[in-house]
Length: 85
Picture 1 (cartoon, rainbow, N blue to C red):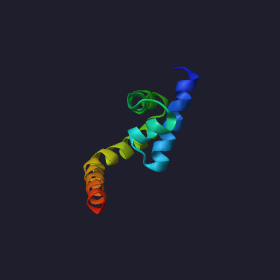
Picture 2: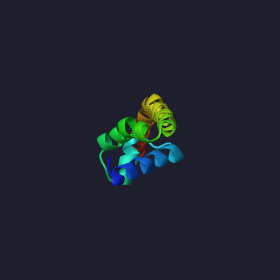
Picture 3: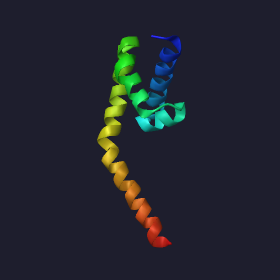
């Protein structure tokens, strides 16, 4: 694995753990695609650091479990703003 990829994987992983970020948020911050972030944390990270990979996996599983709530909140907020206008 090339050094810049290894460095990116560790930086993205640290960011996800510190901020409980979603794959989409991490991709936006680091200027890469969602699929790159997903490949980094699901395939490359376990090769580099298995314990760190477990921590990231837990954060992403939590985000996945809560995403229907976030989506509903976004929709509620959208229509609330529309109603006020």
